[in-house]
Image (cartoon, rainbow, N blue to C red; front, side, top):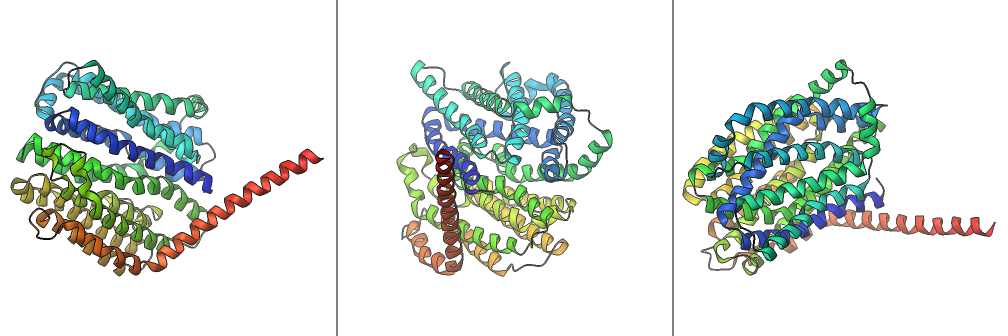
Length: 488
């Protein structure tokens, strides 16, 4: 992938995270913690339905894209089964819509079911259309589509404030619907050639079965992973209060800044590593990437620990504990990113059933930890449980990958991640009562990270300079060729 495409892909997550850091405080000031908690439940429901309906065929599309001669047919093969399942599921769940609304949101409204259904439908379509841009390495178009939801949410929040509209969960639901519709329209326009060609193709049932054989284990793993991420929300909903759920939701959304790293990396990583496999590249380079990613993960933890107290100045007073919680809240996206590298051998070897067992082990740990910690600590217990469960997820997946694929060095990975998670948990537990401000401890860790990963920082800086020099050289060559053509 060239530097231009990399910048294109990186632009979306960075801009989206910046907009997210604006929208989160606005949401927290405009809507009550209870409604913010309900919004968290809505996102949980959408993600669950998307994982179930996609049937793992989104991953099958990514895996087979570089090894098929008809990508349009592949798109239709992967899109169609889940779309039919969506229509059936919508019909079956219709009679229970009020009961589901009451159980999930503690409120009933006739608009809830149709609006949630629109959110699920647009999210499903957007998922596959985004894969087209991702696999074609159209980074800028992909990024613009990622920015649109946050931008439209900010605009609609401004409309709510300006018009004095009712500030309740139904308003939040309308804002979510409008943002997802905006995204699917943009995706549809940017990929119109590809999906129009896909409509004309004739799927082969044998190919569908082969794709499902690859995708269904990943779907099960994805559902288990959803349980891993949703457990805290469900336990807080049942064992605590909607207000605590709102605090947890805001802390998680602030931790969304850490997903810049996750979003950029995961979008680029899977297509790139599968391309390496197809080209017969020496996979030792994966070890180098893992070390470099570890250095970035540790640096993000330290910088967050130094500056998380700034949330006190942009959030209402009832979110004062967020500055402690955000240290554990950033653990899931960062550890997931590391696991994408260290666990890649499971997918390369097509042993995707192992992903199910790895995720189930982490899910079991998360359920037990949440049931133990949430009743006593509320939102603080939920973020600690998540951080520790993702530690289990990372270690189990890494060991499974080393077993079925190839052995690689792991001691430094485990030591650094273990100490970092321990410091994050300590911040949540002892930060509010410590005699010394918690940020000073994280500040003291900054030179340690710089020394421990000196080699990795040098490699990253050198790679950045090389990319920059190549960019300048290509521009100069382009200018010279243009000049020579004009001269002739």
